[in-house]
Each structure stands twice: as C-alpha cells, then as structure tokens.
Amino acid sequence: MDNPFADPEPDERRMILSMMIRTSYREVLRKEVVWRAIARPHKEELRMGTAHVQGDLWSARTQDWADLQERFSIPLFEAVFERLRVEKGMRLLDVGCGAGGAAQIASRRGTWVSGLDASGTMIEIARKRVPDGDFSVGEIEELPYADHIFKAVVGFNAFQYAGDPVAALREAKRVTSSGGQVVMAIWGRPQDCEHAVTLKAVGSLLPPPPPGASGPFALSDPGKVEALMEQAGLQPLDSGEVDCPFEYPDAETAWRAVSSAGPVIRAIRHAGEEHTKQAIMDSLTPYKTHTGGYLQENKFRFVIATA
Image 1 (cartoon, rainbow, N blue to C red):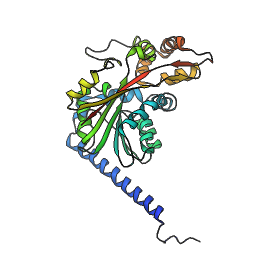
Image 2: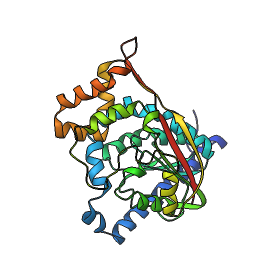
Image 3: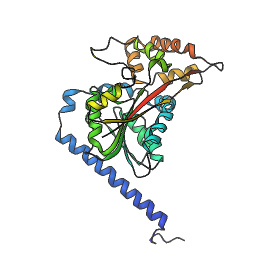
Image 4: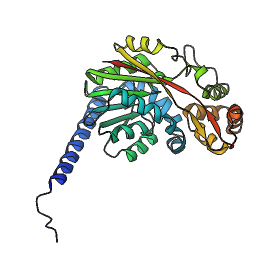
C-alpha cells in the first residue's frame, strides 16, 4: 500500500506547484476586481454601459452559441494565436470572451488565461471549459484588472461593439505590459462575407439605430481599425485575413446557430420569432448545398498593435 505521507514524486511536485501558482494568480486578479469596484462604485450604475445592454441579449441562447456557432471562429483564433506566438507561461486576456472557445485554445498552449464578457451565462460555460482560467462579467470600457499584467489582450468581434470603442481599446492598452500586444478582430468587407446577407436581413427587422451607431462592417475597410487603435495610443504592427466558413448541416441547426447571436435575439423581441426565422431562412436560401445544408464563405480581419 502506498504511503500517503511520502514525499511526492517529481512530476507530482510540479503538478502541485502549478496548481498553487494558478490559484495564487486567480486570487490576485479577484482582489483587483474587488478593489477597482470599491474605488469606482457608481460609474457602472450611472452609465448602464456595454455589459448591461449586450449581456442580456447574449445570455438568451448561450448553449446554442457555444455548441453550434462559436466553432466557426476557430480558424481565426488559431491564426491570431499563431501570429502572436502564444506559448506556455504567457498571460493573455480575452475581452468579450463569450463561451470561452478562444480561451480554451490558448489554455491548451499553456497560457495563463483570463476572460471577460457581458454575459454571465457565457462566463459559466467558459469556466467549465477552462477550469484553470479566471473569468469575470464586466464592462470592456472598464476592465477589472491591474495595470500592465497581460502580455497580450485579444478582442474577437468585441471592441467595435463597445459603447466607446476607443475607451475600450485604451483599457486594453492599460492592462497590457510594455511591449505587449493588443489584437482587434472584426468582420471582413461585406463583399467578402456571405453572412452579410443574413445580417442585413436581421437588421431590417430592428428599429432604426441611434444617430452615430455603426454597423457590423463599419470598420472592415483596411486602415479603419488601425486609425481607431492609434486614437487609443496603440501602434499597429501587423494585420491579416482569415477564412471562416459557416456551414450548417440542416435548416434547424442553421436557425438555432444563427438565432443564438445577440442581434438576432433583439430582432426576435422586436419583430417576433416567426417573422425573424422566416427572414433568416430566406437569406440562407442562396447558400443551400446539394446535401440540404447551408454554406456561407466569410473572411475576418485582425490587426495587431503594440501597447
């Protein structure tokens, strides 16, 4: 019988030490969350910012998003992490992390992963996917982390949806270490994204946007993201495009996947589920395959900047 009080083997010692370090890292981040909340207790209540608006929409059908739609962004996640040279021991923050798909890939590379999202139910899934990660619900314009603690901060289709994108990027810069990198990933140009047809159909069901509001492709032309990042004090360094096809095996799966996105939930609440479903399925008709599924070819663009 093994002696339960014997000294652990070298591999066991390394595992125990790793667990202790990770636990300590999470506790430091959580204490920072509490401190920043105490220091600025009223700002979120007064502003009712991005998390309040987006969190409600993206919490409606989170499991469908995690199971059916988020996976189409895997080529983008992997391309960005490869370009960043994400590796073991690196501290990385995913802003607008959703259900933790990108965080899971980064964690497998050995990184210390943190994630923040507007949706509490998305964060619950992220925590299950990455038990060693540190995930929080909050505002991307007011990140609950200390200055200069991450080697990289990534935002996959996130920064542009902030109430103030420049403020969100400035916050990303603040929490990034000197010489570290901030990534902003967005939709490619509408002519390169067949899903733009579906997004247009959804948009037709929504009430008119407020003056100055930007659509999903407002920053898609080369140079626009770079200009935004420069306003935030970041220095654009590199960019790239990634193919991310959306492929659904049948109509029901397509509806469940597409309707899990926040803007579609808003359309459902405004125009009704039946009307919204009809508009979305009509938009998918040109992309029906001979097997009865649907395939939309899309490109996403990312820009890497130094802090």
